[in-house]
Amino acid sequence: MTAGRRTSLDIRRLSPTEWEQAFPIISQLRSLDEAEFLRRVRRQSYSGYELVGAFHDNKLVGVLGMRPVHTLARGAHLHVDDLVVDAQARGSGAGHALMAYAEADARARDMTAVFLDARPEATPFYERESYALHPAPSMKKVL
Image (cartoon, rainbow, N blue to C red):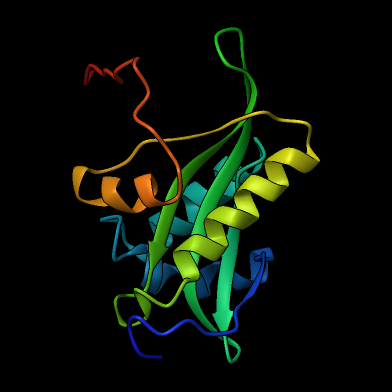
């Protein structure tokens, strides 16, 4: 697949037997070994986290991790935790297709928003997808 060339993609949820296939792509975003990746996905899946794959010619080229969330502040919404397209497939439309899948999934669940945390270098991609910076900053304290 050539960067910049739009291709036909199959977007679908990954079954637990396919999670291992997602590791080489997720590892381009997250610094985890495969065993820890699988442990975390399994643990998160108990709370509704799902992995969605973008396939080109039956080859996994992109992965989205998402979960339904219900909070007092935001109500029911979908949170995208992970989105990564294989370096060789960037520019193929896989990221756009995965985000469109997440948005359709949120609508099907009667959710009115999709939230995500973006690295600064990924912000232009999300802005092209019509996402805007949220006024509430994320904060954390390492314990």
